[in-house]
Image 1 (cartoon, one colour):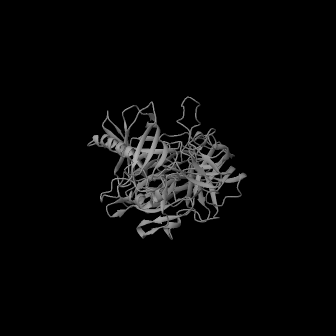
Image 2 (cartoon, one colour; image 1 turned 180 degrees about the vertical axis):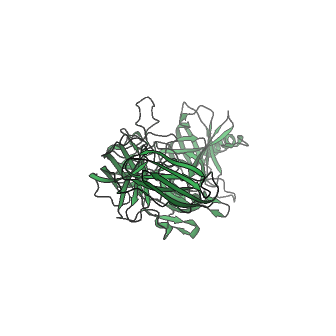
Image 3 (cartoon, helix red, strand yellow; image 1 turned 135 degrees about the vertical axis):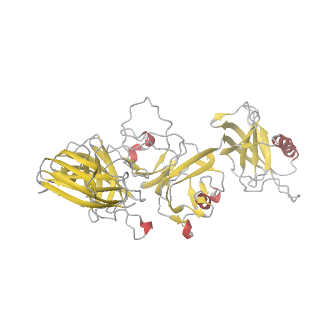
Length: 537
């Protein structure tokens, strides 16, 4: 919001421009204005409309009247003077509003109905002018990959004068603090990318109607100041995957079965997902509400035009609760996003009564690495299975194309991991990784009963906070697992109860004890075993 220092400038220009219009001393361009709004509400009499050159020179002004069309005369530059005081052919016209009561100047966007949308000699155009308060959009970025978009139009230079294309250099500067740029990689839906710190710019501009994947070196926030983009601006989608911007400044429901956020095109949507791998699909899975600042991937079966709906009426229906991908206080913690993933929907689990709070995880068959986690809700579970990040060289964070993976269930009540095997595929072929694919399947529990008692080595070991080990029971038995220091003193009791036969997992958080050597001891009927661990801070 900009304070006016001398608001009489607009009024003075009205008189000057009128004289020029009558005498025709030099060429002009007349803009007939039949509607004026501010923040989407009609404007009262007395506001002033100014037209400015690209060099911020006021070249015409008029006082608004509600009861009649007003004519704003945009004057040409006077070639007889050295000082530039008006427009030249083909120049973009910029508009601002002045509210005399509040003594405030606001930016405005023209909507040209007829005639040229740039200044021309003796031109005539019909337009509607829409003014806005400047707004801020702050986006929180996690360390690593994020999927983002802007729903404001910054007051920057526009690439090729397209009002939705930002200069990529201006966008990259958002991630800069002094001489250091936190942005590692920025890429669009086509896979074109920039690596600023390497001096590579494979993108010329940022399209405000698209979403983007950005990878940053550390957690941070960026803030964009500008004019809000109208939430019902049309977004064209191709018959394929699209990475799109989220334009509303309010959240929209994305739960099953209505998928309100995409209600205008839902008959053509196969799947949509966010940067954390949460997804929605007509198969029967929903995702958390869509929210400003985030970008979204949408797969449609034909070219369509998306128009976001208005704010959701809370009393319209009771939305199906959404369980987001787990990140804290769970047996498994979701791996960090790598930029690419596939969506897996477990429609049912047979052979075991699963409950809310249980988890299903994906592991690489080859390396055993955790590559995806989801939470069970109402007997079903959706999870993102993450691919490898190609930008990190030899470091392997996820699955390679066509690499096999397996599923395991965490039974929260019995505190045990259970293998899962596929029963019936409803879409897709098998459990092999393929970027952006979608697989729905039924699974059955494989409760593996070991032949004898065992206590595994801990992992990691040495560790600096939390370590984990598994143990097995060939039969239902009462067991205890305790942690001892080297003097034989018990420092933690991890298990002291009756357990079912099978394979189980236990963790120990050593945050309250000092560094050193500790012993895990497991005791059961006719069985006792000890493992050594090292806590190193």
